Length: 236
Image (cartoon, rainbow, N blue to C red; front, side, top):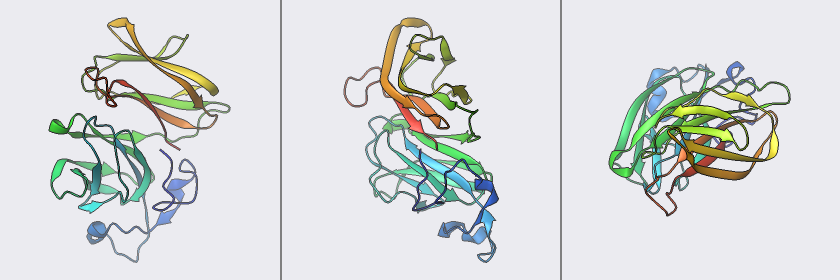
């Protein structure tokens, strides 16, 4: 999830974000602030993880965030947002009717990933705080999120190595952990109760100094573009 430079800062998102005061323009939030007073922002990013839901719009306090078509497995990068309690909503593209909403509290200088999840008939929103602390020297960081609505608890591993993360049920997630960078990892997800059932994602480049979210996507019951699999997202 790279920084959206049109809506954010021209700097790498993991660096000194909380040291910069910025004035933001979510018009529906202006009532909370004196417009002449700069504030520290939160960074919020949006991810479409709802198989079969079609194109969506993300709404923050009744203002649409995305200005481009936003489809399944896409992420929009981080946008600047006022800290505090915010109404987060999702609609079908160009619709005025919410599919789902939630209220989330954002802290200044912090980053968050907001996933629309589950299937169209019962969409919901999952908000995760992103730890963008720089990885150890010569390392990268990854975390795992199980966002497959009909999958059992899952394990994630680098092929040929012990599981990095184990027994994560639907909507469960891990902390970020350090891994060695590689130009050609194969990630492998297994059912925790049935290790023989595997799905792999090959030729994944994990770069030194980068931070990634790997999420289980799709439906085990499908064989089309919404089928079960893995998706890798850069958080910086």
